[in-house]
Image (cartoon, rainbow, N blue to C red; front, top):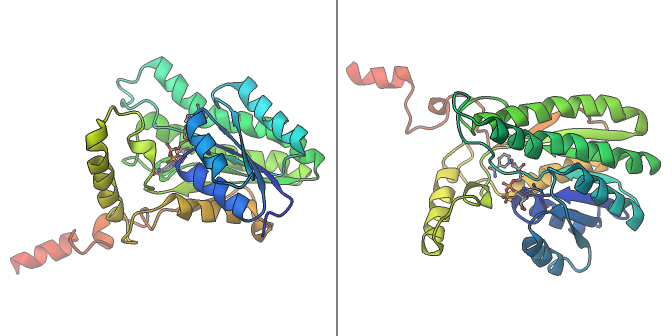
Length: 275
Ligand code: NAI
């Protein structure tokens, strides 16, 4: 019970990575407040949580919503832990076609939300004598080819923001780290696509099949894989760790596919055919 007596806020907790993390925190003793725009998903989660997970509607692109979320946690009994996690795919166009408004909306959702969530969580955490914050970045922060440009730039910003937040907040006893998920099977890939109900199972099956082959560890990454890493970074097990990031990607970023996938030969293996 690493989180006995702890009070946590999880944004984007109604689904996927946030949901699995809220459940894990609650299982290990925390009282959790989920902030999300999906009231139905959050209500279903709260019902499954034995009173340990509460919900407050919060659109993380709105500063006043984030301030109200952190204030709610504070008046409910204080705030020790924050998982800045809400997100979606954002603008899909390349840099030669992206609309300015879409670029701004993507930054607001994925980067400014993390800055302002931290901004409003820090004072109540400092009053408790310290705390821990984890921000969700992505492998897309490291290289092209994983996600659209605006999303990837925002996630790269989250990595730098994590370091600067760790420096700013160390004096208050608050640690700040980031997690970089690889390919994790959640609703994020289909949420904004208008997929007919009858095609949904097929689409989910296709995603699971691709996810199982996307990295050296030959299975699909799950929200629980990320929750385990986030809970490590939120717990006292990581009490000497701040300002860093943890890759949880099944090895997806170790190197070129040919280095780990026997069905994808290296140049030298391909040249063997000419011997
Ligand atoms: P998901 O779609 O299952 O969950 C995202 C949650 O965020 C949903 O509950 C949604 O309602 C909420 N949300 C979206 N916009 C919001 C807003 N404006 N205000 C409040 N809540 C909002 O997706 P998933 O995969 O669990 O995503 C969680 C985080 O993980 C995101 O930041 C995403 O960018 C990141 N991530 C996901 C990866 C994956 O492969 N699934 C890989 C790398 C990063």
